Each structure stands twice: as structure tokens, then as C-alpha cells.
Image (spheres, helix red, strand yellow):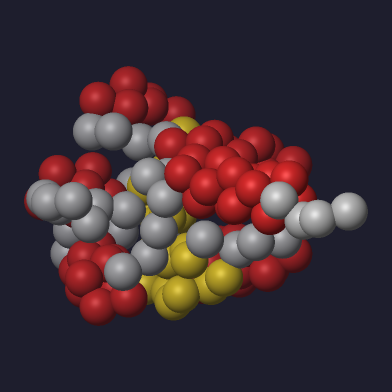
Length: 141
């Protein structure tokens, strides 16, 4: 799963980067320090998941998500110090809402939730199992 980190605080990006690099199955697609950079990164890098701060220069996280349209909209996990925007975050389709400082265990739970919602995650495993099952059943003994 390709991840874009968008936060205006360098230390917050560093902590999230370290967590992302430590979680199996995640690939860091890029980083952004403003809302405009986050939107451009989503368009250019096509991440599967964005760890998005709420309050950033130029465009806030909620406005950035509202401006996204189409099938290629990534999954969003808000990462913020502000607990009072959670309802609004879920209204725009957030997978989860994490409060800073983010603990790795909490981020892992949010990532698992995102993986369950990822459109490409579910179909690939059953198809693979079916092919393997057919091959095993048809080998002469």
C-alpha cells in the first residue's frame, strides 16, 4: 500500500515516516508540507492512502479531501492535534482519525482498517487461492 504523508510539521512527518517504514506492506510514496502540495502529490503519486493533517498552510485537510473527486481518490486517515473535527472528518469519508502524538500501535490499527476498505485488497487473495487449488487438484498421482 503506497502512502503519502501530508503535514506541515517536519517532526510530525518524521515520526509518521518512521512508523510507515516499520509497518510491513507499506511503501512511502512521498511527503507534503502544505494542503496544495498534498493535492498535487495525490494527483502525481497516486497513493493508496494519505496520512493527512487537518491544519496546514494554503488548504486545510478537510478542504483538500472535499476537492478530490473520481475513482482514484485515496483512502484518508486524518492525523491531527485537534479532536473537535472528528465528526466532520468522517463525514468526508475518512477511514480513521488519529490524535497526535501518534503511537505506532494505533496507526497499525488504522492501517488495517484502511486495508480492509482498499478496493484492490479483497479480490486478489481469493483469486490466487482458487488458481492454486485447481492446480493441486489436477496433478496426477
